[in-house]
Length: 503
Image 1 (tube, rainbow, N blue to C red):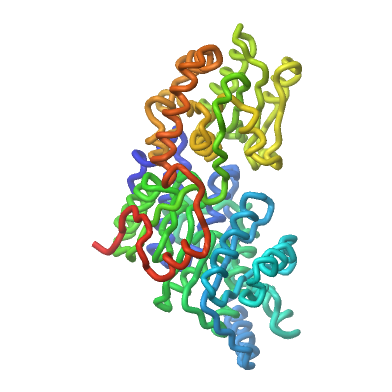
Image 2: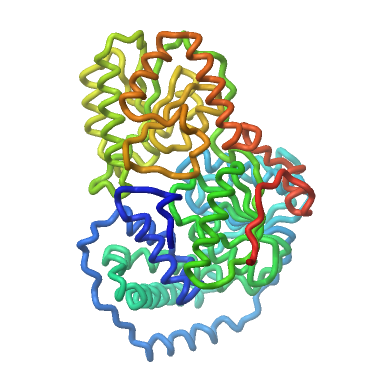
């Protein structure tokens, strides 16, 4: 699968993930349910981990399956609903919680009956109920935890079934990928069992649910993947949403009939990547309609001219051991730029460093050292704090290839996308070139100019907002209200990007 012109990285991890996906999908399309964990395995785990020999007692596994199947003959309550909604199973980011609430309320405003697959342990369960009740939509939404066993027998059998399924899939993945030198590491074996738990839960629940449409946060998340595939298999409309900046191949294959993207650039990259994936697999991909919506979860905050603030916001310090993404040179250049600006005679009042949301898995030592050495003007923010707060106190934003930069541009802040020669590059952000995508020396000159020249600053604001209006539909937040979802569900005209259909 040729992807270098779509996602260029000095490291080969993105290409490795793409090749793994192609081999696995070509053998069994259901293995797509496990692509998310391969993403973690490829980018976060040492490749020198030896994959153990895998053996499954096929007779014992078959015997257990036969008994387990017999226990599931008991009739279950049938559930009929208009919309089956599968949100993200991860609730650690406020932006995602906000997106979930907006989507659920927007769907409810269509008048549809909704079955929402939300775990009971989720801290936002009660919050969602209260917001729906306040909007007068409480009776339209039923919450169901797919992981709750049906009875005491199912409670005992399901964990064993998930473990056996996970081990069998792991063994199958090793068998498929070993000849290509792409086997998963031994560290990923428990992840197969965890993902298998979601697959097992949905496959036990699916026969008892009738629905007209599937709406899922993202087609490759745990649980969402299986739910979307069931929708496609039943010939139902399946709607999913862009997860973030399109920076690698995990987004394909797209298991949906309608895909809501930020805007035309992302839709174009996704459609092209999807076509190349199915060309590599050697099969015809299903038709996907792409819709431009704007920013889905990060908030575009229209900001005034903030030249007088003379504050810099630096983002994207995601330095991980082994440089799995191939962004090491850019991160190093970003640190050097921050150091150079802090030491230069420029009218800087504040330099704010905002770490990556997964900061706990990255080395922030160099950032902390900068803060210690320049404590009067440099500070460390935290990704748990609202991004809007950091944007409101910044004049210029600098980073690598982040959604923070696209949002900053749309909000009206001059924004610099740092790059290095032959470094990390993705086509999804090409609309921000060349004026905003700069090499280190050019970036320093631009920062100095923007902090000292109000006219240059005003012009840079216009450029940023113009480019962001290409990236996000109308350069604005997605309006996920009842009218939007009514149009999407009824195939009424919405600003379309392109269609990716059978060839």
